[in-house]
Structure formats: structure tokens, C-alpha cells
Image 1 (cartoon, one colour):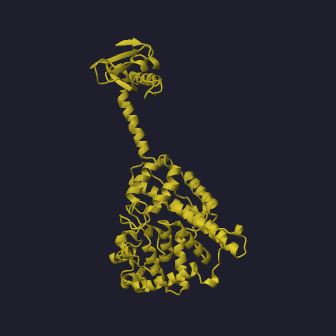
Image 2 (cartoon, rainbow, N blue to C red; image 1 turned 180 degrees about the vertical axis):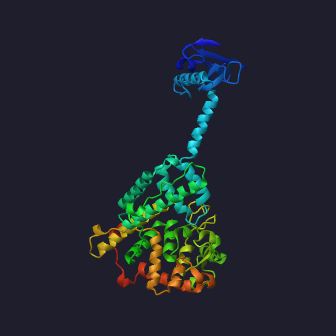
Image 3 (spheres, rainbow, N blue to C red; image 1 turned 60 degrees about the vertical axis):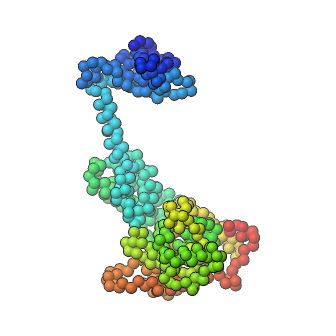
Length: 474
């Protein structure tokens, strides 16, 4: 053991100790501190002292310097200045009879406890234990990760105040209004996110393990802050449906045909995006495979109705019951154009192993293409295309559009509601066990016929776009 005024340059120049030995240089600046080098060239700072519970002086590591000799470009794990600072802190703890190792473990435990009770950590437990498995789990998780975690993720869950909640709700409303320009949508999203926060804090209080006794959402009136949560009333008109179908055709797989099926079937986006081959009769895909291999188109009107059927399983349907969806011939044609994947999911970017994701970007592309088409259509009518703007809409508005169109087709309300997956209620649900599959098939066939008339109108009603306008519509 030698004594020396340690410097970074000196430590960097040290050589490994002889085989089976360890070299030690004590620092003349910081009492009881030294640097020890093993025969493998590992240099570490340490303090020699009598620690609580030990009669003899021992060397305890303060931190690792690194492998020596060290090149000028290499950075040490712990620098000399930091080691001297830590050595002084240990000296003060020992003077008070405190074991530095136990003290640091207590600090680490306290830090872990704080980390385990941040909003971000607790909400992960909430998502895993409470949200997963719910029908709207994907949407709830998306909105929590998109709005709540960025705002409060690093805050202790007990430190979030009513003022934080109000600030977040108002900022969401302002941001949504600036993006969408729609007061109904603005209020709707702000109410949704607040609802997630309120449910989360109530759950955390119920758990009783996070030190939370009251909810920061208590006595927060969101309606007074951002307005009432108004039901959405947006539907797409015929021009918008025509632009929608054209845009979907240009998007290609997987989103293009997925958007088409949403319009044809009035289904929920998640139900269609996560559809699997096992949810259809095997005969349906046998016909499609034969068509692909032999090149002879399937005559879908001649195919048995029992083959043209999609059954949404209970675990993926809103009412925890199987939902029958009769497939129109046009829906079968869309399905027949899908690529043959190895996995079970029909809409996928992982060869069918997982369902498709990235909806928001796909929806943005759809919207841009729709607006370009609407502008081109306006130009052909002699109108100013610069005045044309696509009124914002969400995927769920397609369901409302389909439901509205079914009423226009004079489909009975009971059947129209069942088509879009709204189950029967009350005593009817208990006593009426008829599947209504034939009636729903008639309704969806009528809607497919009407949609085809809208998106591919008769020649007298078609606005022929010249090549320049066609290019713009793309």
C-alpha cells in the first residue's frame, strides 16, 4: 500500500497488479480513501475504515473507476472528484454511527418506493389489472397513454392536484378545438379523458396501497369547463361517401379494404381490424382460394347464405355475445381481394401474426385523399375548390352514416340496430331468441346496393374528371 496525491492522469496510467495480487494507492487529499487495482486491471475507489458491526478496518468500494490503463478517449465510470465527494459523505455518516451501506440501501428503497408510486407506474398496474380485457381496453389505453401519462407520468400519484386536472382538461379541449374545429368533438374528447382519470383515481383509492385518500377529480365539473358532452351527429353525405370509397381504393392493403368493410357492414373499427379467418365458415375461404388458383371469379349471388356469414365472437363484441354479420356479395368481393397470409388475422402487417395498428396515420391519409377528391369534384361543377374543406369525422361516424342510410331504406329500427351491433334490450332480449339473420342480410344487401349507386353512380350523374383533375384526386 502506497500513499500518493491521486490524479485522474495517474489512475489512468496504472497497470494491472501482478497475478493473484491487488495494488492499493491511498489518497493524500481525501483521508482513508484509495484506489485499488486487480490483476485484471479493474480499478476501484474505496474507503478503509471500521464500519458498524466490524472490529477491524476493511476496504469498502465507493465506486468503479474502470479498466486500466485507460485511453485518453475513454471516460471513467466514477471520476476522482466524485469519489472524494462520496468518501467525505461516508466519513460524516460514520461519525454519527451510521453504516453508509445501510444508509444508501435505505435511500434506494425510498427512491424505488417513490418510483413505484408515480402516476406512470401506478397507471401501468391499473391498465394491467383493471383495463385489460374490457371491451374498449384498446381505446382506453390509447387515450391514457396519449393524454394522461405525458402530463403526469413522473409525478407521484399523491401529488396530482385538482388544479392539475383542470389544467389538463382545458388544454385537451383547446388542443382538440384547434385541430378539429368542432365544439362537439372538443367536448367529447375532454370528457372522455377526464372519465379515465376519475376512474383511475377511484381505483387507486380503493386499492389502498398508494397513500391516496382523496381523488383530485372530486368536485371538478367538466361541463362547466369545456361544455356539455354532446352526442355526435356527424354523417357523411353522398359526395363524401364517394370520396371515401375512392380514397380507400387508393390506400391499398391493409387499410383500404378495412375502411371499405367498415362502410359496407357498419361495424366497429376494432371488430373489423382484428377479424380472424376462424370467424368465417371454412367454405368461404375455400371458394376464394379456388378463385385465386383457377382464375375464375366466384358467382357470389349463387353462394349459399350460410357460407356468406361472419360471426364476431363474444370476447370481441360489445354485448359479450356472438354477433352474426351477414356478408353482402360486395363484402365478399372485398374479402376475396385480401392477400393470403400465414397467420390468422386478415388485416395485418406481420403476415397475419398480429392485427393491424397505426390507425391514426392511415385515417390522416384517407382524409387528405378525400379532400383532394372533393376539391376536384367541386372544380368540375364550376365551383371554387379552394372553398372546399372536408368536415372532420371519426371512424365511428361511418356507423352512424350506415344506420342513417338504413332508415332511409325503410329498414325497421329493430333490424337496423342489430345490423350495427346494438343488441335487443329489456324483455325482448330475454324472450325473442330469433337470430334475425335473414332480415339483417336483406338490410345489408340493400345498403350495399345503395352504396354502389352512390360511389359508382349511373353515367348520367357521373362527373367525368379530366386527367389533371384525376391526378389531383389521387
